[in-house]
Length: 330
View 1 (cartoon, rainbow, N blue to C red):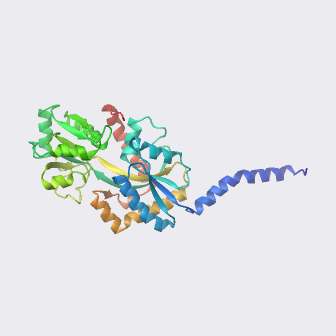
View 2: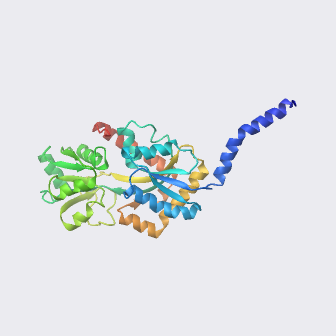
View 3: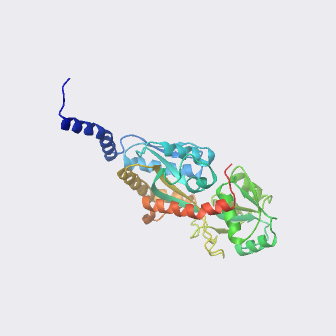
């Protein structure tokens, strides 16, 4: 057997050990070389799915590879999100996350991953506020009047929610804590059946994604008091913000963002960020987001660092509210 000088042996051994790192760097530099999967952690047809498909269609052109959306639903989004947390950090498996999956779930479920540490932020996509609505026969004519009526009638009103731990439930608990009101929560299997009961006058209140109650507001079958964003909705400019209606600083929005597994190379994150920014600058896509009641985040907030800071701030705001309300995932 040929003996190698020690210096030559060490040099060859070091070179062999460096091969995986070199191949990773080369792979990242040529990214993407194969199809990319965007995991949507909810069923087809919902808002998260629509957003994922709108982005995928545009991203495949700018990245030069197929971008496939895959619905992996269950356990309030944690099954699909968990799959991305365990994926190779190479930019080929991404996740459309949102306020529920990347803030709320971390406080109300025992998850097999960390909502902050196990993901790399790519970009903030859009947000939509919650609309505060009530049955048609509610005596109050505005938000101040509603709060006064609820205070005068503690525990008499009922709020329909799309399930325990859903956005409507959490925003309702936040509303109670801010206004000092008390009312009952009635869980439903989604917004649609709850809204049917609101229209029928079986329940008194809802805090819901605007796109669901808005047709009933326009038809005059329910009342709308406010939206919980900082600006009025482009699709419903006559409905005031909570600020304008007298409940200053009452903000609650379901936001959407793109994440990859922690450890994804920076230049891969940068390419993905550029592809999504390009999609969000497209006028046709912007119109579709407006039609959905969504507001695309400003250009300066469309950075990985901005998403990381935003998610941390949301956790600091909402986790104490969730824990104080003793909301547990089902």
